[in-house]
Amino acid sequence: MVFDAGAGSAGGSPAALNQNPLRVILTRRFARQVLLGRWFTVFASLLIMAGSGATYIFGSYSGALKSSLGYDQHTLNTVSFFKDLGANLGVFSGLINEVTPPWVVLAMGASMNLMGYLMVYLAVSGRTARPPVWLVCLYIFVGANSQSFANTGALVTCVKNFPESRGVVLGILKGFVGLSGAVYTQLYLAFYGGDDAESLILLIAWLPAAVSVLFVHTIRYMPYPRRRGGQETSADPFFCFLYLSIALACFLLVMIVVQKQVTFSRDAYRIAATPLLILLFLPIGVVIKQEYKIHRERELDAALRASDPPPTVTVVDGAAHVEMSTNTKKTEQQQQPVAPPTANSSSSSSCMGSFGGCVKTMFRPPARGEDYTILQTLVSVDMLVLFVATICGVGGTLTAIDNMGQIGQSLGYPSKSINTFVSLISIWNYAGRVTAGYASEAILVRYRFPRPLLLTGVLFLACAGHVLIALGVPQSLYAASIVIGFCFGAQWPLVFAIISEVFGLKYYSTLYNFGGMASPIGSYILNVRVAGRLYDAEAVQQGGGRDRVCLGVDCFKRSFLIITAATVFGALVSLVLVWRTWSFYKGDVYARFREGAGEGQDGRLPVGQQRMPEEEEPATVNGRKG
Image 1 (cartoon, rainbow, N blue to C red):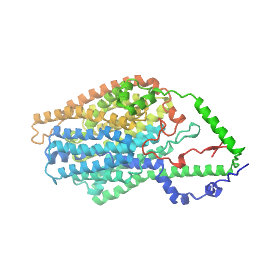
Image 2: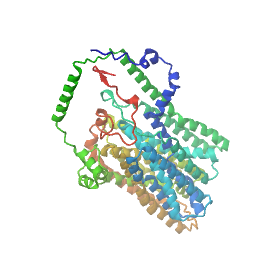
Image 3: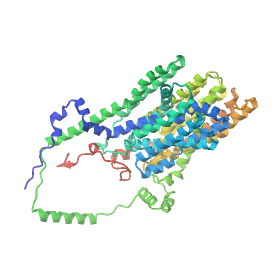
């Protein structure tokens, strides 16, 4: 008895394949595909990242904070430390993200951003009674901590959605964070005219919260689709994102130079912001192009199914045959041996079961590249070495960025030039992030060049910027701001990619944020305990008055000589990690994602993950796809 399966759907007809692309793009079905696709998640993450770097423009409003609240430099650096602590203390957001969908993390971050920075604005503008120092520290901690929620909700989700391109993903997303300082400056000038720094604080209170709320349901885990023959996800869309971001960075750099030479009116600032907004939203074109490509592939699969001979099903003595087949399958399943659990799976399951199981396995980690548990990572020598190197490297560059306003003032630069330094740091922060992300990915795949060795080189390069600040060579602060911005930006994609490669992606939400905690520790040691105290001591010697203003090269000379020595120490420590992971990076780091992509590394879909029909591989009928 033979049954005809039919000739397939009409969607795979030649007429459907030859449709006008514009007609396809304007349909409601295609719009739904774009909004629910993986690539639109990347676009939304780019905009969220572009609004989550408010901590990097602290130097633009730190003077207003210092003068309006009557702080000395040590107190201001203490506030700056809590800002850095909040921005990088993301373990809580990581743990929350392990058990909730990303939209919960993004919503919490938006509310914290609005509440924290709005209270700072009210305090600085005098609309509330002058708060004590500890309360201002709490305000800025809460506001800055929202950045870690945005990073966890958006960036970690994209890394898990594109695990075989994690270096590129980290580079482009972190690059937009680096550009956010210059973006904020241009939007601030367009909205408020640049008359006072209080309005800048108000801008960073409402804008990031609004962007996160707008895309709160867009950011979610998507299935990592199986690729035919081990084929990787094309990197072409990410290079398109890169080219657009380079255009955005060049535009911002031109505007910084022009605005330094020419006096703009408020209307001129608003006109200049129009191309900025266009460049920020241009990546949606890349998303539409990629989704149209997916749409065409689906139509082609449908056409191939329609052209195949119809499958046949033969029924022989139906009931008896079905009963015999069922009994045979049961017997075969009973006779199959049960594979013993691997060390990695046993440690993970024991951790999920009880804390005691975690403690028993914390000193028995799996091989590098497999999924470590959180405790296994925390006691790992590799993590300890990476953490110490990051404290020295990021702590030193962050100290320079946070004190750029006071450094420029002490060396006699005008306030307009100081704002230029802050914007230049933002541009080169972006350049460092995308360069480290893309370049490290390319040479890792092509030459098996270890990422930790690149990190060592970046730390040695940062020493040049610190020495320029310490010596106070005339007009050298321009070059120093470029070197510092580039090195600060380049460290983050390298550190986060190393963590994901060495310790796995299963608990990446938490491990990513643990790596970021090196920043506030380094900032407290080198910024508060070293730079702040030595600056105030020099100001007292000069008789700087109530505001303790220090002028001259000696204000930061000793501080940055100490920071240079600490950075050299961090570079030498990172060489230990290079030695320990050399054989690991000489192998194929991404082999597991090319050979066994699917629901996830542990065989499960993460919380909040949804299946997309267009990304599922067709079933097999009669030995053919479809």
